[in-house]
Image (cartoon, rainbow, N blue to C red; front, side, top):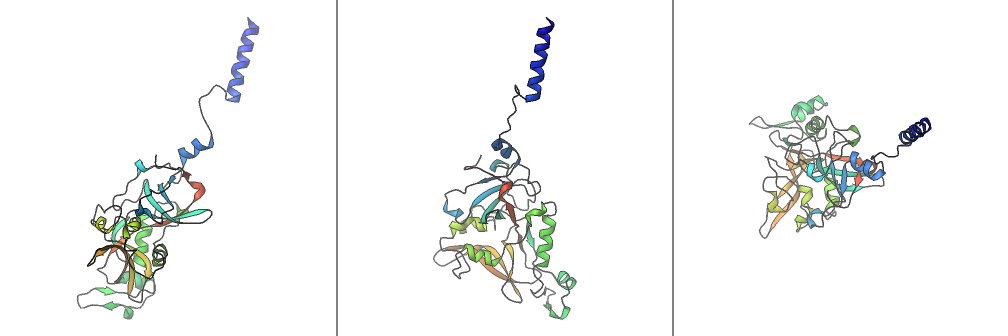
Length: 274
């Protein structure tokens, strides 16, 4: 009897030490899927032309699994699982833009920010109605300040920034035109949610709030800055996804739409949405 008890005890200890007899699974695929954002191939729909991957990612927590069903894309959402369009890649990373504005209406640069950065009062244009228009030489100081506030809790490795006019032209094929191809709906993702009516110009989704395009960090001259707008109605058809410019006047506002860089090894790649 004692011999049988000893053998049973030895078998139990062996199971505990080796981990045999448990139901846990530790293969790499399951571990990755549990703890990483998801990257999927874009749909074959022409509206996604130029998109290399769609990524579902929470910028405040890169160790969180996000899927399409978790995504929140309403205007001015700044955290949680969100949808990103990866439009550029290298061996190690993707450059991605959010599918909505984190702030809908913000200035590019205001007088106080221009002066604080060392700008001169005499260089600022002041209109009879009191509006002011600082030069562009100090950059998008006010827009970048709002961007910093919007992304304050994001993982710093993402290096959130504004889109550029050069990136727009590269995506559009460097054809010198300021609006996308006449079949602009194939780039619908690039001006997604830029207005409540942007779908009529070919965007993928119309905005839910008072969105009005989004700023780039670029300027065309000393007093005009670039933004991405929803489009306009032409004589023969509508044009969408335009790179347009405004003056730096204090009452001109556009949206803040972050661009981030994410390392490929922080993602789990799947063929289709879950």
